[in-house]
Length: 373
Image: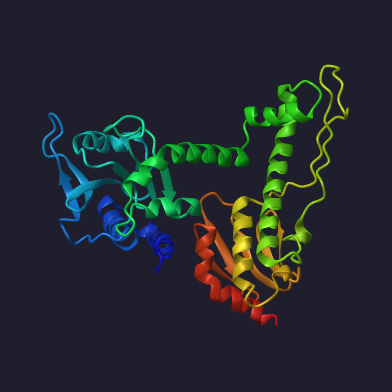
């Protein structure tokens, strides 16, 4: 298997067994060691290559251990500290890594992980001093494909610490900016909304105006993302492919914004009117595109559309409610699941944690489409 295929195999394992893992030791055995062995390609049974409970005296602290050290050509290159899956990863959890990093001169890479998330650090800010912030954050239940080549540089077959360190500073800042953008897309704060408001609204951007524009900014960003996805689909499927979910694309939002304090404005009405409370999330769009890609082996892609509602997002064949392919129940913060219809109109529930886990149910999705042929 390729590096990315091995990585997604571990991702599927985590999704299937995460709920049953309750301790740090179980996390290491079930997820971290397989990641080191299967994904990164190091021999976990060779103590000269993967050193568990690695010990190095640090100042007055004697006998303190780090969970794993990975050596290449007899030299320790990577230090790994593990926490229980589900535990948040924060700077206090990296205290041992900070101490060890300054003592083990050969190690330029430090990893803090809970089996699902991998925070990768180096010393780009000061030599032999671990940076306070990771330059790479990889979540195996929500894999950022752009980070896969960077993680691959840490594998045994492609180990290139110089290349990793050269790219680290840029990756660190790009990653932080992307996480900020992601947060603002989901819940735009006042500064973000005011940035756009002051560029399109002629009146004074008071708090009332900012609050009224918040939904418009969120809507505009979502529509922009949809347009980008459509452009990608057109490039991949040919210019004849119509925009996805055409039946579900809303008419333009009607924005009626009051002028403030007598300032001139292009509109002077009492409120903002938004045509719907239904918001199709990025996860739902990603899941829709994955389902569409899976079933395109059975039908033309433009026959697959979605209809969103407050309770679930339906993926249909021929925009027909009597031809459901899947229903995405992603609105709950704690539980996500999909209903598949290979076995009939009642549907079968499949619990998932991320849209890409739909690939595990590809046969069911294709069978649902074949049932309507």
